[in-house]
Length: 172
Image (cartoon, rainbow, N blue to C red; front, side, top):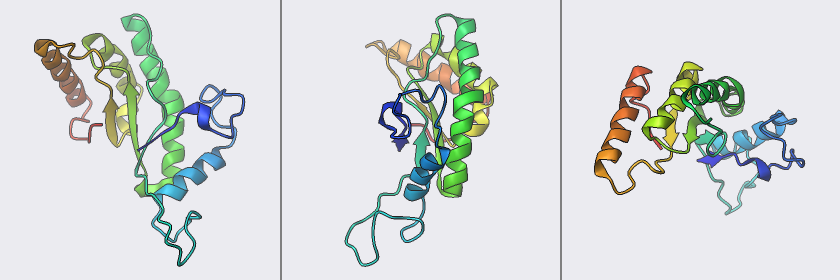
């Protein structure tokens, strides 16, 4: 999986992405294209006859732990904004460059505890459920040594995934 960490993008020397998103979508699309297409097509990392092997990356995620919010309404609004803004833009360009070989994973939010479900609800309300090929999440503070809390976190997440029809998508 390729997770876009904004400080590593050469097209954004002022570190403004994703606030302004890449000024050079073509540069980003070249990265996606290079790593999603079979060897020999659109790949510059290995020359014919070279022992160098090109890596293939199938899954792309726009960022690590998007901004969330501080209260239920703010978290829901932040999830909607993320899905309809940078996540939608990112998914569009990944699919344009990588075709059916490129998969979009996300949202990669910080945890799955009950409070965080407001953010996920917003992400799905904003159309994120239709943009992902795999659902990614972090489970920080989901268990904290308490198996009942772990079960509650996972059960609540499962209910939400089923509500939006993404329960059968791979989870990362």
